[in-house]
Length: 382
Image 1 (cartoon, rainbow, N blue to C red):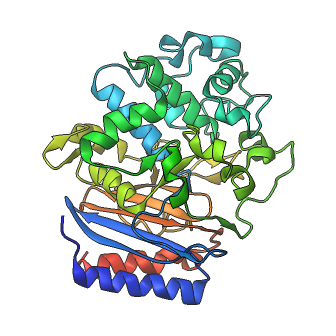
Image 2 (cartoon, rainbow, N blue to C red):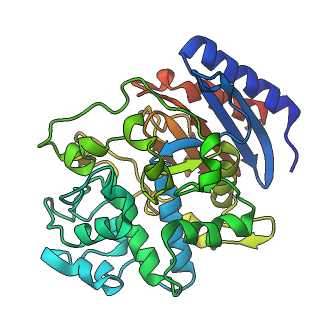
């Protein structure tokens, strides 16, 4: 792998501008073009109090970017013939059939169509660290919305699909172990964690919350899907127990370098360095828009969610969270606070943006990644 020195210099200058002009604190950006790591740079502070600088090995909370790994794990099991997207979840997880959920399929869950966006009773910072407790609670849920309509599973997405992955795994590995064994280790991805090992604790950047995850009324659908007591704030996600738990939808802790290599698998239509994870046809299908992407999502504040059929988001020029990830077939997933990763199978570009300033971009111009993304594409001639 060889970093493009021209692109790296240009991107590093853009990172420095984001810190100077947009209030960023610590940033990492990495990009692959085809199978080559062409951008790998960082700037700023991982921890303001100590003055610890960001380096290439700094780990960052990426929140919902984690959902991309969950979806990919499902596709891995489908590739092996261990699951069928159009069969009911209950075929693999019988307990899930309770209270009217017997017909909900794996594809429904990928497309946020389960009708059960809510988290189960008893959800706390302690219980989200207990996989079995949460999946038992999810199995007992009753749909609160029609499952032929979108309803964003802000947190439950990871446990619903992660448990399907676990149930279809002959070895019944826990979700983090599955990711390490099936996706990370075979492709040299060293820092893509759904539960960090204890020795990595000192490398995690300190979050700075600038109001990206304010509390919502307790009776709102959003607060049912992402309860206020476990919302995506430092007070919850900097707890050592939370950092070490497999909280699959929102608990990922990655380096940009490793995350970009993950996205490169998808940008290269399922292969990397001569090894195949997914068929090109499966990746192509995952890059098609979900049928009702234009429909308002009642959980997501009645805004449309531009999702793909494969459980990823798609680029939208009008959605501040995803607009930096340009491309007609680009798949991406944004994370709370402005994290973003994407794969463009038409150009082979894969990008990961990690930072520790949790902000909520109101417009595309507000997003600190917009200029950085444009600089990456321009410096690579894309």
